[in-house]
Length: 452
Ligand SMILES: C[S@@+](CC[C@H](N)C(=O)[O-])C[C@H]1O[C@@H](n2cnc3c(N)ncnc32)[C@H](O)[C@@H]1O
Ligand code: SF4
Image (cartoon, rainbow, N blue to C red; front, side, top):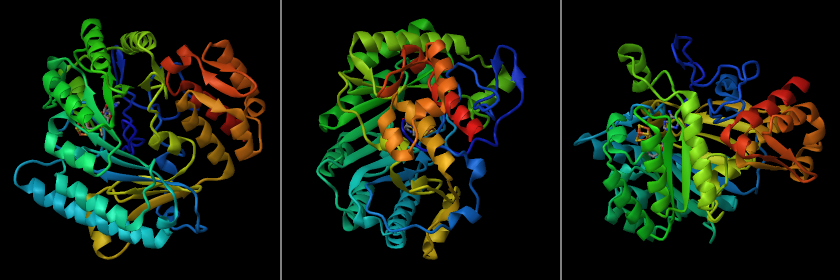
């Protein structure tokens, strides 16, 4: 996530509650149960419940619209205690063999999808390697995949090339190869600079290793982003301040702060039920984020989204924002999901089934969903508000309506709550709106859908 893809968690929501901490990761239905807090990061719309096997076949007109590419690497070197992503741990001798097989499949999938959807005729905005942990691949795997991409696509001078990395896996040799391949952005999951918290999260990093990896990433000349997570087990005001300030002092180009959302498929969740693990409360986490916002303001890290803050407002990345604004994204890899026009699609989750489909020469799409006009508009709002500001003229040009008229009551209420500001040109999250994450976007999308 930094800007990445997630598993379908809609079916995992547990109903259990534990004193002081409600075990509801993403509220099942924010349409009826919306609260002004930071829970429930929206990853997609319409949500996966609406995607079906029948929906995987669609009729698409040939398009020359700009394209983004996503490549999913579903492997990690450990299972982090909080992580809900669909990933597989691979280590030891099997690792190389498994990744070799996966990368071969990925390259064949690129051939199949390019042929079926005529993807190669379009300008390339961005290429994003997400996971899992792409940086656990060997330099040769990157070379193989990039060679395949160059075979089909025309990279433009300003095509953004991002790799997600976990610090311990980023060696200088790999970084040098990434530089040669033209990688322009490295996004690293650091999560915390406190060794106890890192250890408790079951990660193999330390603060020292993370700082070293940041230096290595910076040595490539690429833009460097790091992810921190607020709300990890063991976090206190003191540890949070230390982490945040270390992140700022490292001089990275952008810092992303994710609220730790609790999901039923995580070791954290099991530890809460079995061992009474205590996590920071939602109120404490809000205080952590408020501190982050204050420090970012002092250091001129400006909000590019409600969770990514870029130094002096520069080096704004293109990949996820492009997707949130409604641009096309083709995604390769097991469980990867993408969008072409108003059609969403997702590949098989199971890596063996995914590889099997490719070996049979079939594009490995398992399900899809065509959006109607109202869903498309709702998507533009709920995902678009992540970018802090919504351009109202742009919205009108795209959909034919003024958003401030369609959602007048909801906008008035959000203004009264101090979450948004409205001008002739834009609807903008206030500092409080930024603090509360997806809340304003959800509020507006609820209004749109209930009008529709
Ligand atoms: C694919 S990982 C980043 C790269 C690499 N796998 C790593 O962890 O270093 C994307 C990000 O998702 C975030 N993440 C994982 N589980 C999360 C959760 N339960 N709630 C919020 N963010 C989460 C973490 O900040 C992580 O850095
Ligand atoms: S390394 Fe990243 S993707 Fe893998 S389990 Fe940890 S947080 Fe999740």
